[in-house]
Length: 226
Ligand SMILES: Nc1ncnc2c1ncn2[C@@H]1O[C@H](COP(=O)(O)OP(=O)(O)O)[C@@H](O)[C@H]1O
Ligand SMILES: [Mg+2]
Image (cartoon, rainbow, N blue to C red):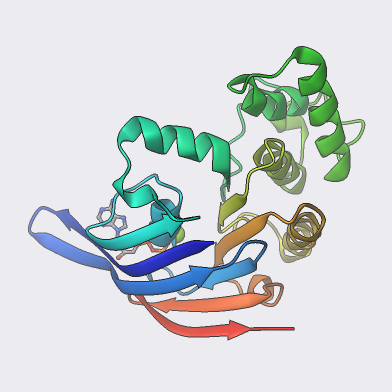
């Protein structure tokens, strides 16, 4: 469970202060498929980065399974990120010189795992995301949707508890975006992984099981759907 309590974050650049989050309270249960929706500048990325231990909050708390992640030192945060979280980005962020297989297997290199197991897990997850036969292609030989599938496989291969996806369909056409959302939801149901994704796209919101709307750094609406 993720407990977000009265979280604030203000960015200061020069003389200008931007209140990116102004007191966010949100509880997310294990296995949710939740969308953080809102217009550009509403604080979506800031919130995901705080949950993802990439940024530090100004006040409030974030507890993940009771663990005060907001309060950990740099090394403990890095370890927690590696063991518990997976990330999917708008621009895929694959390593261009590595093949699809190598991009996914790379995520396992930091864990203590032998080559045979790395190979089996990587091949299995690539097949699950629909990339069987494309394992040896580099990102520039894959479409945007296929690259995002590699990124999803890379995030899932460690079997993390939580996947954070910041506008995962923003660079895709609507048809491909829909396929990616369906795949994420399938993976959520199959693996029980909690998915938290941000979007400002109506179609993407429609796939969420729970839709939290952010506006000017505050939660405006929180709706659970069938
Ligand atoms: N590193 C930063 N420095 C200064 N202002 C920032 C920084 N990151 C985000 N902001 C500001 O904080 C607000 C929320 O940003 P963000 O969380 O990126 O929103 P969203 O992802 O919903 O577009 C915006 O007004 C943005 O300009
Ligand atoms: Mg953003």
